[in-house]
Length: 198
Image (cartoon, rainbow, N blue to C red; front, side, top):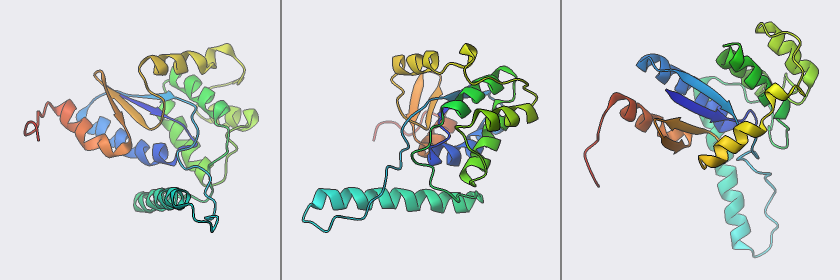
């Protein structure tokens, strides 16, 4: 089983969705999507101040590289990233994921939310928009304030497992932070022990 902890405002969660689904399908293991509200990993980019603060300039350069790198991978996957997803509140959409999971349509729902949100076609903080989307996936009368869809119990569980950022993968008690670890997750699930200590 692969547990994929995600947030819809995380571009790297979006980039990991299809590859982890493909991996789970290839290996015949269950894929579970777990919502976790976080701050976007691509923090606000501002032009360097022009001052002598080398640290500020280095932070800006790293953030700009991370943004460019994410867009490069999105292009490779054919994903439309037309908006800047920062500063968006994903709470309602994440509550919708809990509802979709209970109906067995978590992946399809998440795929649709990611695609439409990053294309600039979905307001993920709109209860009306999320309810309509869930209805398309067979879930009627979604109420974002329904206590069944509360994110707090999941957040507490993630805190207990020291999972605080996304994307994170949980596989047989092992925690992997970042989509770059998918090859190692494959090795773990296939029983590959590797060449030994480096």
